[in-house]
Length: 391
Image (cartoon, rainbow, N blue to C red; front, side, top):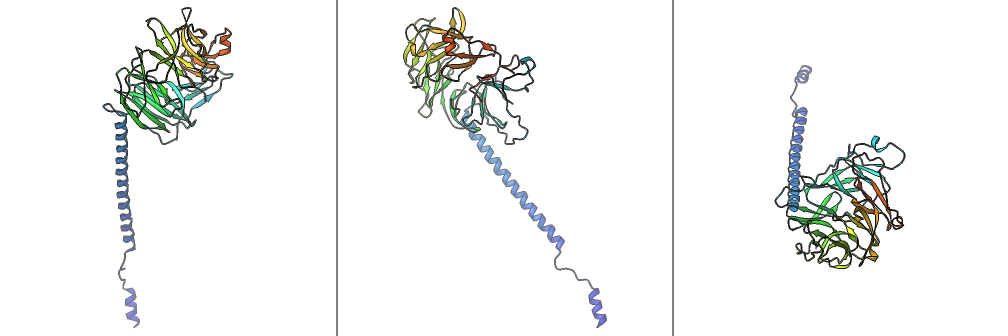
């Protein structure tokens, strides 16, 4: 008995289940399932992205390349906008400000450096105060429109576009693209709901008038029309007088420059906000420039416009309440370039040809003391900042 039991203990029987082999087979099955799942997700993502880009291209361009929206979801290593307040420090020639693509400046001389954009010519704050919409300067490749957020994100909304105009509240944008004029809403870092209409070859958007876009049909001649997206194609121009539109009055009427029967003479006019732009009131006293630069005060009382005083180019101050036969203008300062920013009903700022800041006080100008230019602190010589409403 003892010998029989000892033989059974010495005999090694094989296990019915191999634990190591079972673990290896289980791991192989899990790996195969994960690989298949990953490939499926990648395929779905590729299809969705391709469909999105195709839809964007179809909405923004008919024959040319699509206008691309580029995003950077990773906030790491973004250069942040940097603000500066004027005060004692290095002169413009020895400024230690970081090299920037564009510099914004407000009426108080404060600066804000925007990285990774430019060259640009206009900028407006986003409606939520989270950054800026920046319109690029014209180039052989067209214009660009950027969103620059306060966290450093720079995103291209438009590339290769023609003329671009922004609504005053930065919620809408209109632009020329090939043979069409388009308008879209701005939501965050995207353009949505694009609407287009064919326009003549020389037509360009000028500004927003409420929900309509003022379109100049020929930059070399007279005539504007209003396009209301969703109400049909661009109306034919009935207006053949208006040359430039400087701004709006509180009641919605426009202030502009109109042609007269005298080829060498133009007049100021208050225009009805219809597609005919009929002059309601005119004043033909001041000698006006043909550059179209001008701005209306928020209360509609004053107009700053470029013109001549004694054959000298100057900016002119016009009292719109007295606009009529024999209207007069007062020299306000050196000629204006770019945007005119009214901080109050009687104070305005602009940049002159030398990129110096000019602050106009209506009371001082009316007292015979035109504004004088002053260098913007901290802006290097030769660099042109962009004047904005404030930070």
